[in-house]
Amino acid sequence: MAPPPAAPAPPSAWQQAMNNAYTSPIPVKKTHLGNALSSEWTKIKSVRSTVWTLGIFLLLVIGIGLLAVANTNPRDYAEVPFTIPAFFGLMLGQICLITLGVLVTSSEYGTGMIRTTFTASPQRHRVLAAKILIFFLVAFIVSAGSILFVGLVASGVNSGPEAGDEPWMGTVFKGGLYVSLLGVLALAVGSMLRHSAGAITAMLGVVLVPAILPAFLMIWESTRSLAEKMMDYNAINSLAKIFGADDAGSTGTSQLMVLVVLTVAAVVGAFALLEKRDV
Image (cartoon, rainbow, N blue to C red; front, side, top):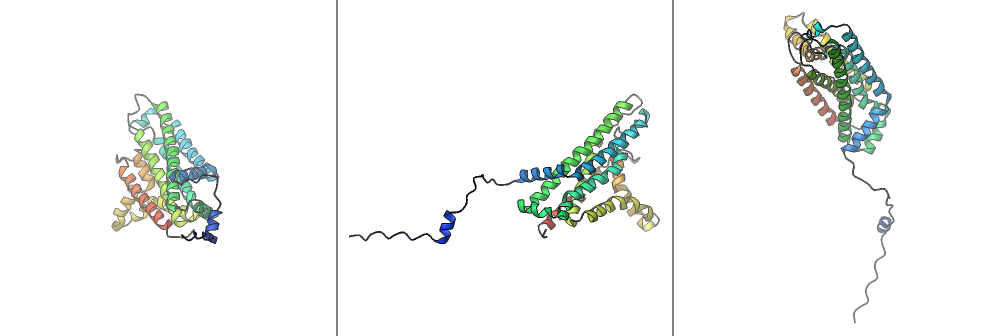
């Protein structure tokens, strides 16, 4: 006769806890880059710094541009593109995009909200990538759009047989890309320094020092070649070449490529430091 089956062992405390575990009725979905992009878009459109910096940027580029258009005639555009008036506003307006780029990252470190951001999205690289993409798209649309608007107004007011046929749509893309990359560079610097005032000061040095220092370096023959390079590749002269305001006939492509390399290097550094430091 077979022995009776053994009684099942009582469940352990761990098994009882697992059986009684709470199951959320809300479906849990795996997060992705799109969620981070949506979060960063909500942030950048909700803070007042975005409204103020972009508002001042548009006021400078469009306002100064239209003022320049009102004081020109068709003969002034015989050898320069119709977007040249926007260049004068961009010389000041680029500071606005630099400031906004820094604030996109450093402001969260200053307020401590970056802890909440990284708690909600532990993949830090995804957060920084979303910040860069959202900021770049916003900066490029606003800058290229303002340059295009000034160019259209200048073309409409001064078009005629006396005006030249210089192509100017390329300056819309290059000009918008250049100042947007400056903003991304500032964003990366803000991420590395984690301090708004320090990052803005550093970026002002990047923009202003190469434009001022060559005047002193030209005094000595040994530093003259360095001064000439700084004059060719500083932010103001680079924009001048892009918009055809430079008599050398350069299109500013080499200056744009140098900025791309610097921006990529800064972004790589920001990603590298992001994973190594506490918040």
